[in-house]
Amino acid sequence: MNFLAIVGRVFLAFVQQVGRFAIFTGRSLGHMVRPPYFPRLIGRQMVEIGYYSLPVVGLTTIFSGMVLALQSHTGFARFSAEGAVATVVVISITRELGPVLAGLMVAGRIGAAMAAEIGTMRVTEQIDALTTLSTNPFKYLVAPRLIAGVTMLPLLVLVGDIIGVFGGYLIGTTKLGFNPAVYIERTVEFLEVIDVVSGLIKAAVFGFVIALMGCYHGYYSRGGAQGVGAATTNAVVSASILILILNYVITELFFAQ
Amino acid sequence: MAPHPDSAPSKISLRGVQKRFGANVVLDGIDLDVTPGESLVVIGGSGSGKSVLLKCILGLLRPDAGSIAIDGEETVGLTGRARDRITAHIGMLFQGAALFDSLPVWENVAFGLIQGRRAGRTEARARAMECLDQVGLLPRVADLYPAELSGGMQKRVGLARAIATRPDIVFFDEPTTGLDPIMADVINDLIVATTKTLGATALSITHDMASATKIGDRIAMLYRGRLIWVGPAKGVFDSDNAHVDQFVHGRADGPITQETEAK
Image 1 (spheres, rainbow over the protein chains, first blue to last red):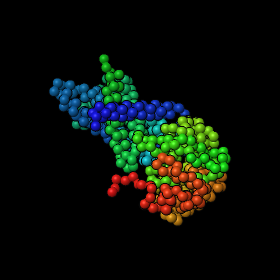
Image 2: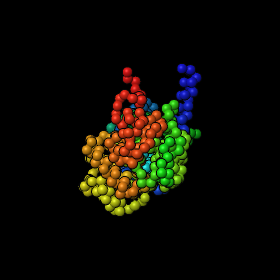
Image 3: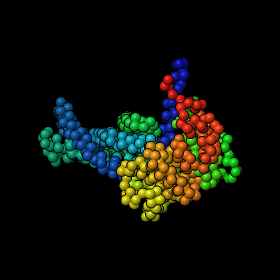
Image 4: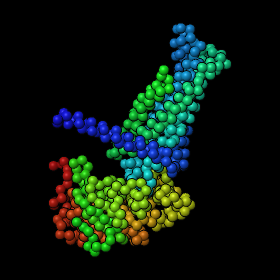
């Protein structure tokens, strides 16, 4: 086959995908902000994303806080800066580790579940059935998940931040010999509002991305069980990559000098 | 082809409907009229374009060319509330029932009333129970989930959902596929009874000839994207059309060739 034809076909397919994704995102945003809403569905998704993700986010952040305290202590000991451990732990957790780790964990748990559920609905014609019952699938399936993602991930990250800092405190006071009162004082001394707020904004963006990727890949899944499996994988991989890219972009926006 | 002989105003009217996927032409200029209260069955082999035809009429797919009118109103390109206004008069029984797994049976049946027409849950549940009774299901089924039902029961629930909003038009997509012959006949009887009770226009697609002749007033045969024969259901076995004869008698030999890689 002509090489140029292959290149052209690949390029056109890429443009088509980008266009389809842009239209999906635009329609999703439109239905997310415009009433009517489905409070029962939003509530169900909030419980699914917020409440049921707490254990995995809690475990991830507490161990991250513990490791961070240990690593920064051994590292800083080389130039006698062990006193900065508490500050490093709290800033690292609130700015970066809390939102990114929670985002990645929720992407694996919730993004996959959303893609599998909506993908199964697609291949079993349940989405077509919604349309024939005068119910817009974007309004009924996508908007509640996006709203729940955007609102619940910041709350999860806030809880994760507290647990992560507590993990650092545990190691600092029980293993590294810090005085508990001094550790807490050092923790709050250099912490600024922007550190927490930037992390929460990141979380809201990540929540949107996770829900959007789960819904998008599920909505366009094709070909039965194999298609649903591929949609699930794609939802998790694309959400994870986007989280890492957007993490850099948001950090640049907030903290670049 | 195929305007209805008695030229009554059409409930559903298709003119020159075309649909292709890449190089594959699935519908190649379909003309069809269905009159109010009539039951038309479209037959054809697997992959002949029956489902695509139905999805085009329902607005789930957009035809590449042609016109689809329901009650005289052009529906191609309709979106949002204009589409909802048309859809509000339509019921649909899907091939696999397409019940919502996360909802109990009664909410599945009442879905169009609660979400589409903003009916109260108590009122919607009462109507759902009425429809379940109409399709021969006991009240205790109402609180079960679709995964707890047999295939035949799921079809019945799907039928109850299709008629719950008292639609003017009901579509049936392969209503007896996957059912044993007795259950298939039960579903056929229910389709005839419920559409008669509603006074609805019915458009079904199937390749089950027992079903087609039982539920259809007229039958149309789709082959290679075109309607090659339309006539009364009772005349389908004496159509004098070689393609139709081969299909309705289920013969391997004849003008219809299966597209297969096998030698």
